[in-house]
Amino acid sequence: MQGLPCGIIPFIVLMEYAEGWAVSMVWDDVLLTGVGDVDEQHKEIFRRLELLKNQRDPARIPSLIRYFEQYLFTHANDEQKLFETAAYSQAGIHTSHHSYCIRQFILLREELMAGGNASLVVAYREVDNFMDEWFLQHVRQYDMEFAYFYKYGADEAGVTNAANGVNNQKEIIQV
Image 1 (cartoon, rainbow, N blue to C red):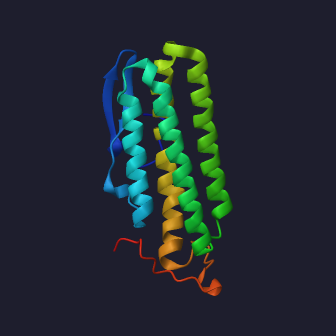
Image 2: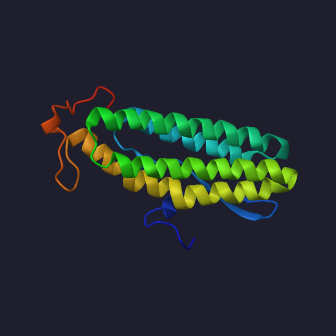
């Protein structure tokens, strides 16, 4: 489990597949940001990743990659709208992180399309890497920072959105 961000170990469940062990991430409410729509989308990302990881028919992997990739676009666009509404000071950095993720999945899809059925194991490993090295870190760092800003009107640096006249009490926040 070397290389995992601190605090990730409780979410890990091992599942066996033909080439050894794969790491399967299980949703845990500790990942809740408190921003209802964002949390629901994160749960959907977990669900779609599990669909991909549990697929044993190599012919279905590329379509599941596209299915997941499409949702990443939806999630990134929806968060971008929230950034604009909240006048989020770190929107550029957060958006760059989303763009990197989407590019990685496009590369994975292209690799799978070029590799055919032999790429099944590659797909499992890439999904594991995404979960371990990107998604959980992104939620725990970037999304939690945004959620704090969104809910309280300031980030850790003390930059507020109150000066912009933004109402911090959004109806999508789950209290």
